[in-house]
Image (cartoon, rainbow, N blue to C red; front, side, top):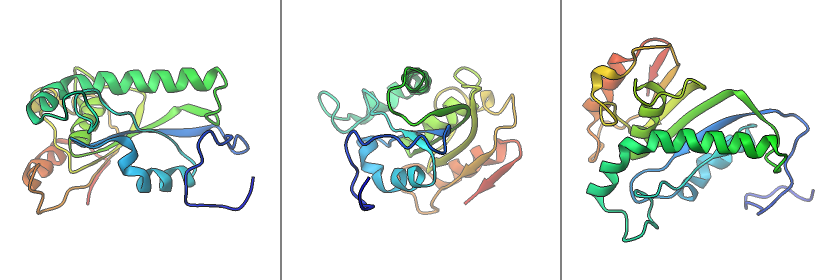
Length: 191
């Protein structure tokens, strides 16, 4: 209730009128936190999605001892399982009536930036860690082949992919993003 605002409202009542809503799991980049992506998350929420944006324990900016590059990259192999855990918990909380607005567990997407893009590729497309409930993925500046070897990605399913990658990315090479995209099965799009 009240006038619309760009400011998030803590503990705002959920709008259940048009639910259930699709869920997007968003994974942050190295040294970031989910809240750092507030602008994109706000856009998705305004479009009718529930967004879960966890802070991963070893790679977020508030990690104990800081977000150490080596430790965070080493933990990347665990982040797809962490992502699946978060999806499970959010769906459970929603079923318990914890004011999430009603989640449609048949419509789950994944997205993430940089290290979060790597997590997105892992949780959506890798053989070891694929969560089959994810119906679409949009990794941003992410690459495959980190969670497990690249030949273990895109072996099952035809989960739609929208890959976004800048051609001047100084951290994760553009060509590595293109290579992951080339291995993907259609439908797929590269921006």
